[in-house]
Image (cartoon, rainbow, N blue to C red):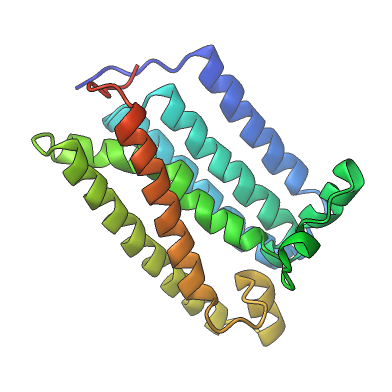
Amino acid sequence: MIEYQFSLKHWFALGLVLFAIIIASIQPLELSSYLLHQIGTVLMLIALFICLKNIGLNYFSFVFYLLFLLIHIVGAHYLYSYVPYNDWLIQLFNFDLNQTFGWSRNMYDRLVHLASGLLLYPVFYRLFQVWLPTLKPFTLFLLVIQFVMATSLIYEWIEWSIAMGLSPEEAENYNGQQGDIWDAHMDMLLATLGAMLSGLIFLIKAPKSSAPT
């Protein structure tokens, strides 16, 4: 088992996430939906520390995991369907992203699902590397892709089951479907594509020995 050292740079990165949670907790757009989303944040932080203790993670994987949580925390504050990313881009760069691509819906939830595959891939890869140490990198790559597909499906099931217990307005605020009957399918596809992109880069760029440092 590889010993993992939690250094000052790890505390700094974690501190940024905790600060973001504090800021996001100030007057969220819809409190009950915000709390539901932040339950997921807490569970993911617990999972992160379990991974750190039991399998070890390099700093790159640690930061990417926290970066995903930051993206999620922003979505939790505004609700995914109402994150004003387009207004920010117009104010800062005079660039209308929605108009440029012809988007009629808020696409922030799409970003979160893409990021889930793209940014969490290194942690998932490390899990399978420890569980199945004799497998070749490409086989591990395929397993991680399948894992992302499966967990994306399970997440959509959980989201649906929670929404079934809410009022129609609360359910819409929570799951951000925005009237799209293919919303869950697109979310799962984007998570898969994100993982495939990250995995291909990982296969090409990662050193032969990918043990945590």
